[in-house]
Image 1 (cartoon, helix red, strand yellow):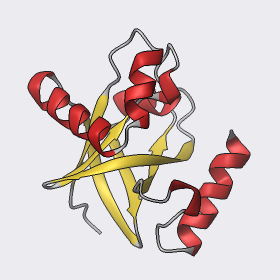
Image 2 (image 1 turned 90 degrees about the horizontal axis):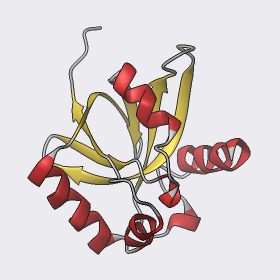
Image 3 (image 1 turned 30 degrees about the vertical axis):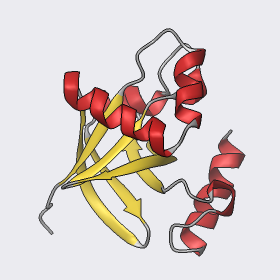
Length: 137
């Protein structure tokens, strides 16, 4: 998985945020810190643009557990994201209730593979909002 992620990250950066194998699925690069180690990690994730931020989805392909990056964001919500050629400071929060449901339903409409992930798991797939922040410096 690490090699695959690295190849996606390299293609993303080389092509201004576009990755051929994802065609119509928009991707961003999420920079986050490990909950236990504090080590910086980068994950390519599908996203949905929102007013003032972005939504990402802790689907892990429909696995029974949440992805590691989700746990890292709970522990360390201040992140950096790359969207296209822009680098943005953001703060993560987990969407709840109607907000979560509305965004999730829209993601399944836009990218039907997410409905497949939902069918594969008994857990509620978390929707994480990355809200833009201005950082000093």
